[in-house]
Image (cartoon, rainbow, N blue to C red; front, side):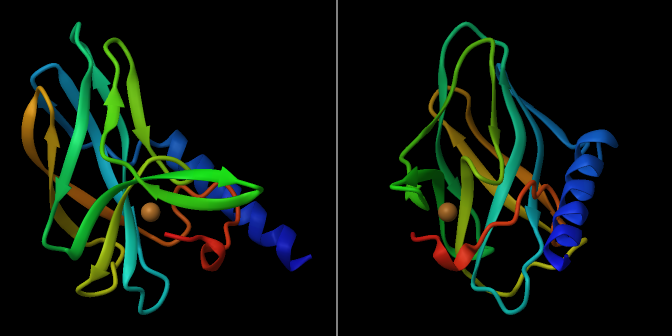
Length: 165
Ligand SMILES: [Cu+2]
């Protein structure tokens, strides 16, 4: 029963996230529009966290790629993807995230994300921090990441302790 209530709460927060357009920060960089970088508040004294980008739209004619992310919020900042291998959810470091022309790429829970390893302090809801995104063609841009409350954007319950880096 507790489990069901938890799921309902998580679905409700995912719905809120999608419906009221909370994340309104857009950045233009060449042919790219970067919409709403965000991160989830840490649950307890976490040393790792993840940042997401609602979407990166490419209005140009050529493919671009997110080839690096830097920031002082954590000791190491990497681009990751979530994969399922033999039924187990795992994270993998990726060198680049493609942004195809005429398409939008999302960095979201359960998919591509920006991994923050060795956080200097747990992420708190309401806090913001800068990250510098580097794209192969469009170049670099500093964006502001908004930290949302725990549960934001979560569509299903995930056991992070079973995830391997
Ligand atoms: Cu990761």
